[in-house]
Length: 175
Image (cartoon, rainbow, N blue to C red):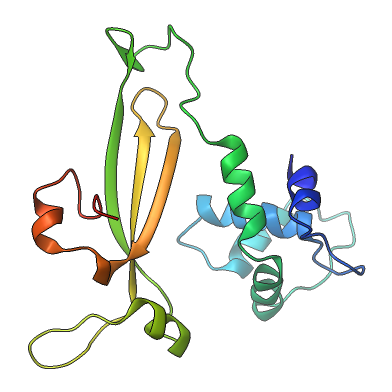
């Protein structure tokens, strides 16, 4: 699936690299599982059992550059390929009276404080000044029985009105 997504999105590497695009996709998937670690620690976890193979020395900067080079399109295409309720008709807790049970939830995520992010997302503020990191609001629709993500959306946190959010299902339901 990863190779097909890379071919479909034209995100494969044009030359031989220490970190091929396929490996970067697996690194990003593992980084989601080990979110408390940085890229170098995730890389060590991924390659820990490969002592007998010649693994190139990779720096944190090289991992970051590889992720940036890959871009968002392959990960979005992989998500689109895999998303869905992932339950059979008889999966326990997945349906109520024949209807798929789902939950919607949202959270705010800090993004790096760069001029590009500030221009697009704005910055938090209070009565005194602008403060904190720019934020996005992430909302996800999840199947209750399998906890599989059916869909997700994000928007600048500044676009979410507090009055609308408190009257809805979550902090980002208006996004």
